[in-house]
Length: 193
Ligand code: ZN
Image 1 (tube, rainbow, N blue to C red):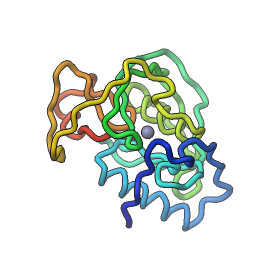
Image 2: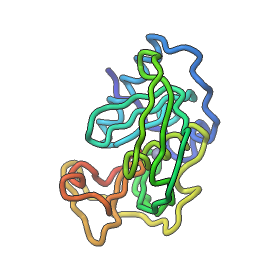
Image 3: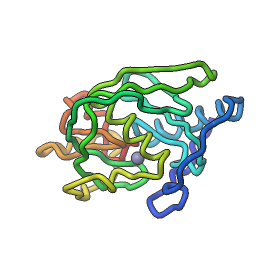
């Protein structure tokens, strides 16, 4: 278990195309555990390996329904469009509106190297798209409109209900505007993905 340093915008690793994982090994599993620890410590809802300096195609996601770790994730189906607010753990404090597919089907391998698949909509679909973009060196700011900084509370660890109007969101990909009170509780200012 280890909380790793989250690389920030400007770090070249965030702009590299991450390489596929040939085989899921103990090292991969350790990476997944460390990424999960790092994501939770940052109050994020998603994290991609390049964000911890590892240019490999591994992501972790947890929007509150449990941890999903996916190796070599790829979108095999996408439909609809939705626009919502996103932020990113690698770009603290910045938010913007990003158009994404409303529904995606994602395939890859789980932490044991077994075939894995999910059909996701809404926030979950958004987070997957945000994280998979990271694997291709793409940041949400490349696609966003209405980029703006949010004021960071002095210690926003626990609640930052800033709600005014809905543009607060937090981590990677997460649209606060769509989040109800509960969700928002976990979505803090930081960033999420
Ligand atoms: Zn991100």
